[in-house]
Amino acid sequence: MKNIVILISGRGSNMEAIVEACARERWPAKVAAVVSNKADAGGLRFAADRGIATAVLDHKGFASREDFDAELAKVIDGFEPDLVVLAGFMRILTAGFVRHYEGRLLNIHPSLLPSFAGLHTHRRAIDEGCKVAGATVHFVTPELDHGPIVAQAVVPVLPTDTEQDLSARVLVQEHQIYPRAVRWFVEGLLSVDAQGRVTHTGGQAQAVLAPSSDA
Ligand code: GAR
Image: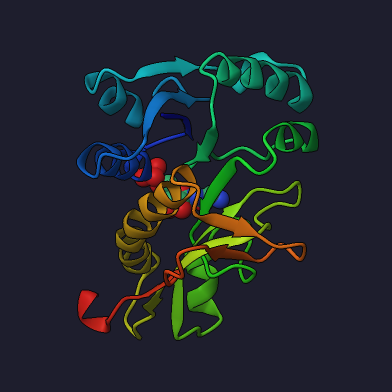
């Protein structure tokens, strides 16, 4: 049984999707804890209602990023994680923290990486006239929003899209690919080659193409 620790900063809908898929599909894993840097993160209530341990560590109480990340790692390690999942955890992580969890730290980013690392991904995709957008699950490396790509989902960008429309369409797909990618990890089905390319050892496709009728 693998232990998963999920980090959130807000709503936590990806965390919910992972918790639910883990239970429904009987993964060989359990969500041991949900940790937030914000006491008012909406997802904390969901986790507590499910009997999952929760912890809050407010970054504002720390003098430096290094101090916060060191304490955060202590909290996380108390739950003996095999995998740490960033699910809308809106903090830039120090290289030391990332190295500590190397190979067992996943993130979801709402763009087709390597395009649109950073913030405001949907607005930037619309402004660039992109015809498709999407989301990426990747292993975390010290470089922001980079690292070996595990899975991606692609959605159309429609001519009338607002940032909110596109964000909502992408989020539906995030809830498909993130649980799938986490399941692959806990089942030991992911392999990363020397160049940082990830494959599913059972040969499963790692991209989802959402038809425009999903819009
Ligand atoms: C998701 O769209 C996720 O991709 C994004 O924050 C949202 C969190 O939603 N993450 C990032 O932008 C990280 N760079 P959620 O709290 O409902 O899962």
